[in-house]
Length: 269
Image 1 (spheres, helix red, strand yellow):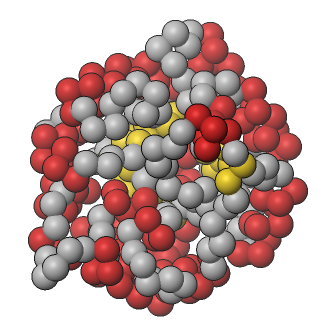
Image 2 (cartoon, rainbow, N blue to C red):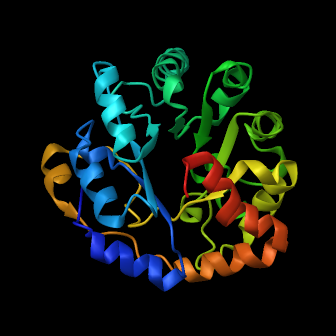
């Protein structure tokens, strides 16, 4: 997939439109493990207001990680796709162990996206043993009612019990981001309320909000020719989604989600 360009100035305008003063910039997988752009973007945005989440490889050295830390990076994002581990549980276990041990000395977080809900039952015993904070994107891809088949209830969908169990621990975090990957009820995603309330109620100190800007389309199997074509970003009403979240949360929960929790997790000042 070849996404369109998104500039720092466009990002600043997006932040301003939502009243955001600080940010965490997550490395795009299109760059693979080339973090030169990430370091430049974080510098442009100001390390007093922005930290970064990088992608590193198995050959990234301690010196390179130290350099990233000095540039404002405070976490890594796992590229499970390039390592053939999108659905392979054994590979995921090995990758989680390897990368968590690499970044533990810098007190970074480790983020990833789990596509296979059935994997959570087997990952649940492992994650609490890892020496870092583990962050899963997009509500852990838990599905709202508009995305569930037949009469399956939201509370009984695969993976939810294991995720709740992990949230009760000390090192597992969920990013409330990209509701359009979990619900068809745009723009307010009303049917996401049950999922959001479930996660926040379990542990309001282990949830953070993420914009997922600039809203790239879902990954899909494409031909080489299709992959080289520039794909437009999704048009998402971010303000409407934030309005929904604000209605569903108490003042204290909102403060934790939007300010206190990301400060602790990503080292924001």
